[in-house]
Image: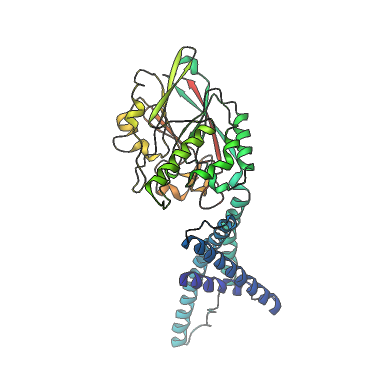
Length: 409
């Protein structure tokens, strides 16, 4: 808290400098506005921690209050950078003035704060703040369809043009009881006319009841073949303090029942054979397996793969993309898996996503984190997710519905 207050006081210097030419009344209004917003955001943070300290889920509005406070503080760090640059310049001027005084040469330099740098810093800070607010208001549910065509010489002829639609990381708990976004998403999914729809994990944030208001919307999703799904790291209830191990197990059973209620076929280290015109492909689905420390490894790829050896084309559903390149896993032991579909990263829900350039802070944690990756004849596609968690918005990496058309090379 002391650090937060120190930053606030420091950034206020930029506000004072920027409003210097204004009238006294306007300056007072700006000061009251700055400290009023600061006080409100700090109060919001304390309210969130108050609920969490008592093990009570805070009201939905506190998520947005906390996110707005975080966006403001992040933006103020940008102002701090400009103020530090200004202070270094001022220090140089003070030093030069001391030297010139001792030598009695030249007019003194003005060591006061630069209004230009103050305005520049405040303007630069407004850009990410505006983007983060837009991400909450619009970006969080601005569903986008991404399309790609993948060619394979070993794809059975009957599957030439076969369309797999992937969704991932729905995190329905973040919608609370608001069913409109997922009703809209389900309608958009159905418009794509996919042969097969797959969901690659993280249906909920933490507990099975989060899914219940949304089962009707999810049950509307249609494809020519039965929808297949897997579990993600958030689906196991590992981030909840359960009263007993039995309660945790019961929650997972309940979540699996929700998959069935939505009409989804949950793959638990197993596979399904898709047949068309006498030819076959295999869809393998594993439970969560994360290469990074702290993520669970429930997946058993050997079990899922067993029985598919004679199938000429294989697609793996694995929530965490680090599974693909991990030691003794997909690339190392299963060269006959042609395509892996993952999620998990969300693109960190923030970044730059252009056709020729992608950047997000999550790339420093995950080597494969958004889009298509290839190594030899094997491919991985990382879907950046349909929902959100933590920050209740998306900037750059908007909620994604991926349509992959398989073509025979």
